[in-house]
Image 1 (spheres, helix red, strand yellow):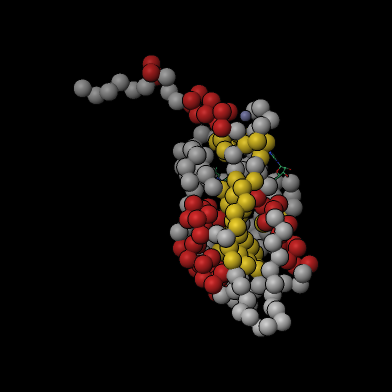
Image 2: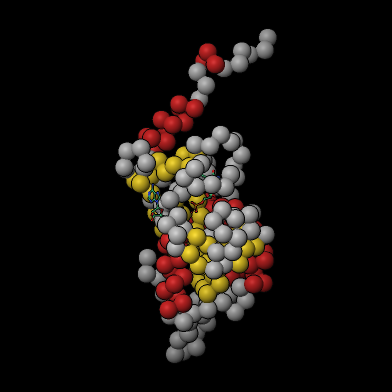
Length: 208
Ligand SMILES: Nc1ncnc2c1ncn2[C@@H]1O[C@H](COP(=O)(O)OP(=O)(O)O)[C@@H](O)[C@H]1O
Ligand SMILES: Cc1cn([C@H]2C[C@H](O)[C@@H](COP(=O)(O)O)O2)c(=O)[nH]c1=O
Ligand SMILES: [Zn+2]
């Protein structure tokens, strides 16, 4: 939680880079934690760059904004490879909503870290069906540091790891907040998913 990089050292050893991932369900505090780490890096006078996918226009076109209105200025990018060009000269790179990038995000983070940059990615580990989301599983495998944060289940108050979709859409990507999603624990998520399944009577009859 308190990982602070050494920007240089007395012996002029090459600067070390690494990858940190902050994952969890919606409302679990991923963005807050990302902002907290980046703010500390700025206090330490490190050069910080922040990126988010351009499709994430939910709260603001440019700022990264948490559900409780903490915010930090970022650069929206259409594809992960843009980050490589824009991050040159940084000590620390923050990336929010990692799940929305394509699989090349993993390579981009590796290259940044190999070049001595501390990379912090926040993103959903699972989609609304509980499936691994986008490049996040591969990032979790390659990161040096992984933090899984939890929300509070809106049904029972236990810790929540699932993002339960209340909006009627079957597309994997559906931007939204509490109008479209609820943080739920495993039993409450399963209960909701079972309630959505059509009953045998409501299922279309098989063609003969
Ligand atoms: N069910 C919930 N559980 C926990 N926090 C919640 C919940 N609903 C709203 N919040 C708010 O969301 C904040 C976390 O927001 P944020 O960092 O944007 O989360 P994430 O990026 O993981 O979606 C919390 O500090 C809290 O104020
Ligand atoms: C579960 C799930 C979420 N989304 C969208 C909804 C929000 O716009 C973001 C997640 O934001 P947060 O910072 O983690 O709250 O992702 C989606 O498109 N598909 C999903 O399955
Ligand atoms: Zn619950």
